[in-house]
Length: 116
Length: 116
DNA sequence: ATAATAGTTGAACAGTTATTCATTTGTTGT
DNA sequence: ACAACAAATGAATAACTGTTCAACTATTAT
Image (cartoon, rainbow over all chains, first blue to last red; front, side):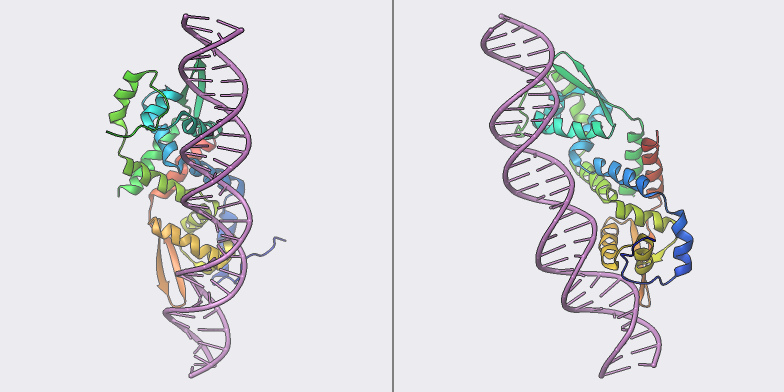
């Protein structure tokens, strides 16, 4: 039996019971919200947008976004953990590229909400 | 002249200068990241998912998600501020409904990334 | 070898955020 | 008018997050 945290009874118990089994697995919801958490930062959005134009090394991204290399590197690490970008070392430089063609379509759909 | 925060020079100056004018307005990027910030919480994702099934009052949402009415109400306020849901008072109850048909498509595109 | 450069990393700090708790508002039924 | 209930709210707390700073690794050039 699951422990009750709710502090009230259902008004429309029948509806609640009907919907309950349709709710997706909690793990999927966590994955979804984690994905959006990664997108929910303007620096990371900038990085993704820039990398949509062209793959680039950390220093160039730092100049483009007017940030320190360190700050950029930290955020690229987050994007890498989310498998949204991939890194490729070339000499002293590390080139980052988009790893997921779905990002652009997610942007587009989000913009439809914003620009309505 | 914009103040420089970056702590290095561009490796590929030409590329940076080519991409710079293609970067979208900062205000748009903030709107985008704010939108994703709202989606980046598992409670709010649950609420949106539930409301996709049916409009519901606060108490029923609390029972369905096993949370307190207060916690649900706080998060609904965030969703309302983001214009993702709308509220309709009916007697003692307040019924919430999705306000944006784009949410589902954003979910779907995000799931394509997650489930690849 | 040494110096210079590109990038990464960890700790620290300030700012933000989600839930809890107690209180308040508004509505219905008696 | 009063009790009961639904929902909203504000303050408080704990947990989390992004940037900075300093230190470190790895690669290249002299």
